[in-house]
Picture 1: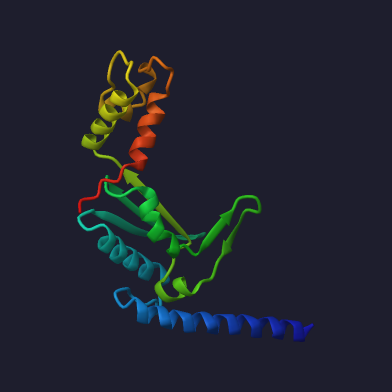
Picture 2: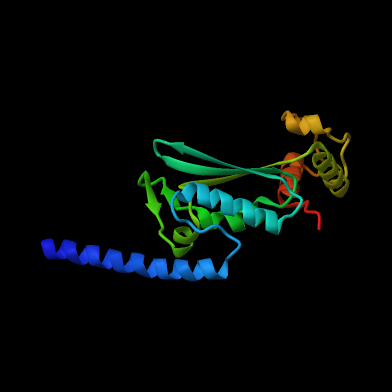
Length: 189
């Protein structure tokens, strides 16, 4: 029994050592990022800020960390700018694993990237939209759909009153507006 345990520990240490070697190579190929030498949560937040600023100059991101009894998190928020999918292509590599709701367990996915540049147990993104973007998307969608008696105002969208607006073809105007906004990248080059 002890030999099985010793074997498992030995295999785990070998995997950890291999990840460390890869992490060292990552440090060399990504000198603009902060190496993780201690607090992985804080290091990951710093690196997320660096990468987002480089990828989306001119867009202001708020990157906040939280610690709680079940772990920690990194919360990223911004207004307009890139799509959530574009931001998550950067931030997802800093997540320590995934939560499995079927087993009610968190599954850690140890990687050389998180060893090298830090991680958070949960990494959340939250994009909001300015009134000018909401107004423009409402106008574009309603023009494209046509057949509407009235055009919704920004406050109608924000306060959940879109049910009042119907398109003659029966299209879900609110959903069309929401999809159009989520796919719109408002990044200044």
